[in-house]
Length: 112
Length: 116
Image 1 (spheres, each protein chain N blue to C red):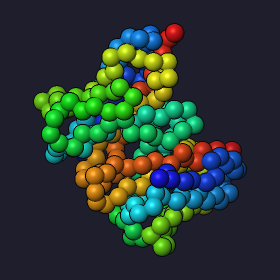
Image 2 (image 1 turned 90 degrees about the vertical axis):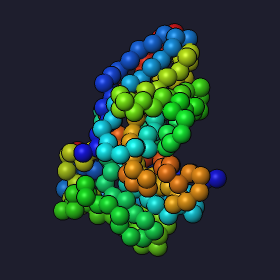
Image 3 (image 1 turned 180 degrees about the vertical axis):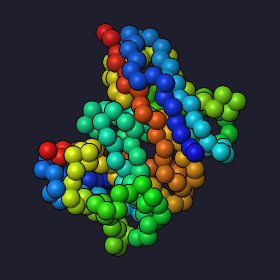
């Protein structure tokens, strides 16, 4: 069965520090992978996606993610966190044209 | 380009009452999804439409939940009767079936339902 695991429920980083959010997936074929961000009371906004090709994907707001097939991982990174990045982050996997299967999310807090 | 619209944004009802949510997808998007997001969890798919046909409703509690997309555009999700465990945010998403974004889902702001 397809599944996504985000091992960290809550992470706190200082403003200006680097960030890495972990995501591991279980999927029978090469998946389509996504990272979404959700601010309080808001819907989900796509940060970046991986379908094929270059395994290092650039997204919006300075985020990037790297697909590692051998580790079944798709970790999200940002070199310098801003206070406005505080939100909930969701990793998701899907097959082409199909439903998204989400992880449970990682809540990011940013210390001034 | 207008995004996915949902209404109402908030709804409070008592258990055993009924409730309906409305979604208008991005113009031209053939695929529409309804997700349920319980507090502290990631969203889970309830139902997926392609135009006005159902693609996947395997996780929809059909004894109380129903959804329709009669003209292949906007959609309604209904709960009747509601239970306490239905308290959640209901998210609507849409995606095109071709073009550069055909595997990307665009989400609306959601409807937060509280069942008392």
